[in-house]
Length: 106
Image (cartoon, rainbow, N blue to C red; front, side, top):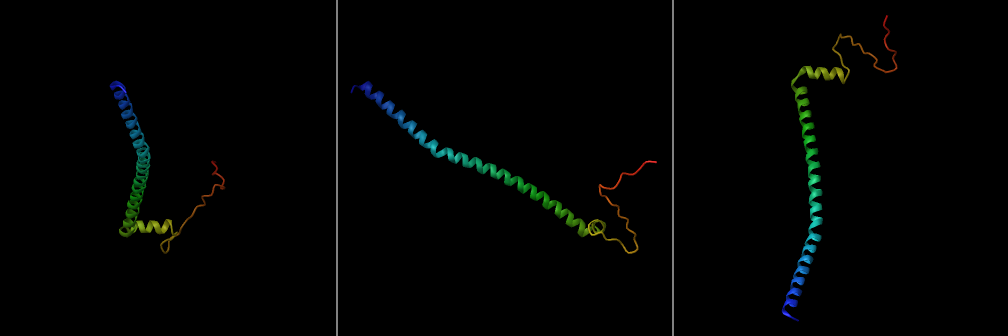
């Protein structure tokens, strides 16, 4: 084989080896890229859930502090949620059903 033909063959072999190595690298690397993207997406969702839970926790702590420190808040909750009244008070309750006829204008 002549020198130019041998040199050309050697170049082709190096190119084939490079393409084979690149293909092997990509075959091994692309699933890792997908997995990393999936993990980033999952982390984003979990971070969002964490922010929501922290906000809910702050709301609950504020409510707890109000119920602990503010007697008016305790009274409001007792009246609204537990339907309690002070001794001697008259409580008026209005039916809020949608079946009641609308008021008439004279």
